[in-house]
Image (cartoon, rainbow, N blue to C red):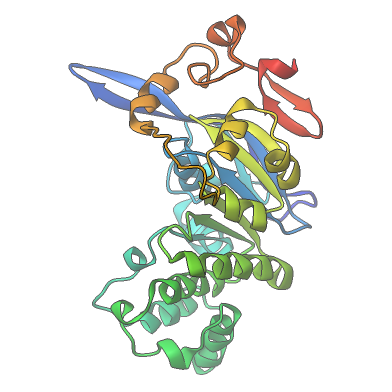
Length: 326
């Protein structure tokens, strides 16, 4: 089994994922993830958020980290081991135990024909985390970490649970293997607004009590600001700003981050929300744009932005990809 280095849990450097799409009789390549670099420390659990609009590359990045997509180029190491080169047996026995997913739709995670506790027992058995006679006690302990109990879910089918309960069971299933990293892709987008903060609070408690790092993928800047320690803002495959969440969302530097922050509707009876943005109309143009991919929408655009790719710069304690700070 690979040994954990002292400094980094997850190390990503110049990561690239290229897809090809058919256009008529030809194929067009686009970089869904383009030159992404960041790391998570091994000794200090944290909630690290990847945020951005639909089509920014967040889910593709998550799928590569989970070993579900192979990178086109770059480095993706978990505890010093190249995830893409892990043999299938070792990936199943070690990596999939260490790194667990939580997906957007909890009901898509479970078959409607199987009782919900079947998945919990199966996970405990497959990864050998509890002896057969101790399985009930162990699973009940894990469920209590997410605010449930084995008595509440045993014998029930997924459709007998609320959306919040189903997502909590999904998180409990991930915790059964005692992971070091949970990759949560839009985990609160399909639950009621009243339940979102309870799930976000649960992530914070898991980080503090269970020492689990969480990679939180979201377009919801409100829960990101409340929950996470650091945040990376993605735009069409790039990370355009990254740093402590209080700095990045409190005083954003990149015009795109500023745009996202201003797009959060605020409760104000005197101001109607009128702005309409069709992201599907923008995606193809921005992915193929020469220079900065935000140039077409940026209020601070300069001539150089239309010609050259902006560099990754360090400014005010964070990374920002913008010519304004060169």
